[in-house]
Length: 425
Image (cartoon, rainbow, N blue to C red; front, side, top):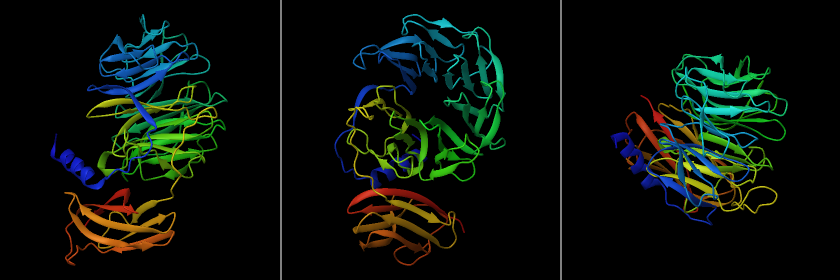
């Protein structure tokens, strides 16, 4: 473990005192090897894309076995006929729930990260450098979208009109990355926005609104959630305080996002039932807020599945389904927000926050070692919006050095949010 990771872990240990509530999750599988993605067929057979290949369960997650031995299977999907497609190169296809596999004739690209089958049974493979399409069940392939090998296609989705959308990350910052659209079954694509956002996931609700999850921005750092109601012509930023790795929407248009816990951001799974206008962390004993989530999906039965990453990789499933036939209770949504501006700053920054009711509030600045630097608020405050200026000094009034600092908001004794800021002199 490198020094930076040790520091981050130390900060998490110092910052988070968990207030456990009812469990919403059960762990149905865990492994020391990486789990990248999953898909569930109509018979509730579960297929995981893992470091070692495709692992499956044919009894709803009770027993597991290796169905396909293949190094770094980062893409697995099931189509409407319960055919299972799996990476890496060459792609593999099983029409008997993973008992047997056939190789598909895709050999040129490398490291396929996403496999999607559209309503016309066209297969799309997203990879580092572009997207390939097959219109003949994998016998032949065409490169339909090409970009640099520093850009990766993470998500491909289709709306009710047959329009396709792709989300990408360009790690070099040279090309824009973001979101692309195709109106001709994937034969041609145009870039439609979210430049330099690290788009990790796309999902579409029943009204054909697109939700894009970003796990960061190449120049600004913060990720978030975006919504478009006009096929990607314009985007509204719904959140800018999380690193989103995955977005999934249930049959009732409830939105679930999986979040990374890197760099002090809140991880776990978050939930919205008002089209992304407000959010609640689903915090529980089995999945506290410092658990990093890599993937979230919701099959037709409306159970939520989430995959965590290191040190132990878990597959979680909600105890109850989320849709109209389920009873997926979450805590009352609390409108607690925290941010600072400007960031980076010199010599002062204004930290703003809101609380949903009169509460005891503590707002404290820490350094990167987890040591307390300055108590900014330690008082009872009324419901509503509040702000306080930190002038870059410690408790003794001595100016602190240029560095990354964390400010932590506690409300009624419970850690609600931690953000980072950068002092540059």
